[in-house]
Image 1: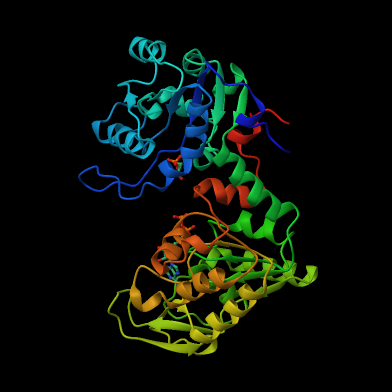
Image 2: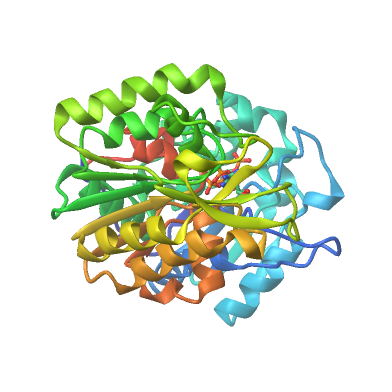
Length: 394
Ligand SMILES: Nc1ncnc2c1ncn2[C@@H]1O[C@H](COP(=O)(O)OP(=O)(O)OP(=O)(O)O)[C@@H](O)[C@H]1O
Ligand SMILES: O=C(O)[C@H](O)COP(=O)(O)O
């Protein structure tokens, strides 16, 4: 379903409450280490300012559990946003109440302010209607641009839409249209690569993709459980014993539907889970009892890369190995490079895979890198995201 966006409504002179996802990573000195999510919201913010709106930004930051916590104030974010916009963005010390109301009243068209972390109020995550009403009372229009938080049914992502007309911002529009098209109407061959630690985190994603893709590539720790289901011995590798039966069922489903499901044929095994551990490449049938598989092997990486390069649509979520350790990063790097070489639509579904493409230096080559981790996974599961559902249809 196509959603109305800020292009479809008149915003001139209006007070516009924009939910953004400014939940950015920071270091121990509270300095922002990656401002991607702030940059990603700029097109919406700039457009609204240029159109003469009064822009009121709201975001969560971390998980302060409904209490004021100095560590999770948004001051650094307001500072960075001011730099990026080239204009001062005021910041309030609470997201509701007299100070916020006064700050909004003082806004001129073309000015922006950032409200304090909405999660300082327990009512936010409870989606409390009274709290949502207070937030809504600050504005005339609600714009949701927080794709990364759209899987949360919270007061500032969903509740406010009960009290204000609600439309999508440009980031939200881009995320749902690119990933939505890939899932609903992909150019084929459509290949998905799923990796990461565990099958249990991504059962829903695999099940949904098995109704859509031509080829499903599996790597990372979760591949071990599938290999176990095929009867291989995995030594000391991470295996979810209670998911082996499920893996068997998923393999059978793929076969029934004529979907190619690729698993590692060789793996890099290590004597211990450590960066400097002794390691070697072996065929999947030859994993020594005391060793553990920590990456896909070179033959597997080459096979996966070949399939990825030929694809017209590729979606990737989750690393192929323990890529944080250099010795076990080759498989993930090979996938990132193959994605960069693929002329089709290439989508990175958030999380660790984003770090991997950035490490390899190929981020610019991707069609789309989602700003959502959990949200993109739920999207790939085919779930309706509450923060999207509340927006007006076109
Ligand atoms: N063979 C393996 N054995 C053990 N751990 C592995 C293996 N392969 C990958 N991992 C680990 O899996 C983790 C990533 O898994 P996760 O499921 O969290 O991925 P993601 O979905 O990309 O990340 P996020 O949860 O941040 O969105 C990495 O820390 C990586 O080291
Ligand atoms: O970082 C994220 O994935 C989003 O900002 C959502 O954060 P949350 O998992 O704390 O709701």
